[in-house]
Length: 35
Image (cartoon, rainbow, N blue to C red; front, top):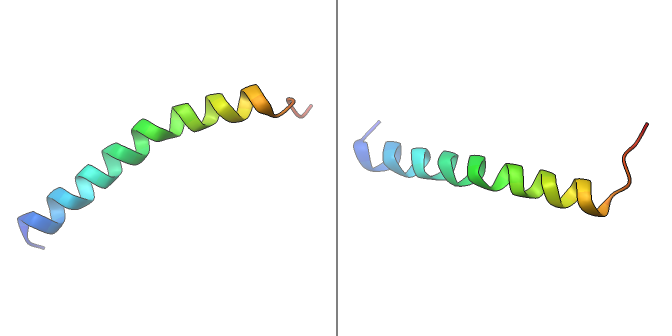
């Protein structure tokens, strides 16, 4: 694997991991908790 694709994959991973907590917070805010 060349460095370019490796860096792109790492950037995508960081982007997704940064988005996930925000999405989870939004879901918790808008959706009632399932018990």
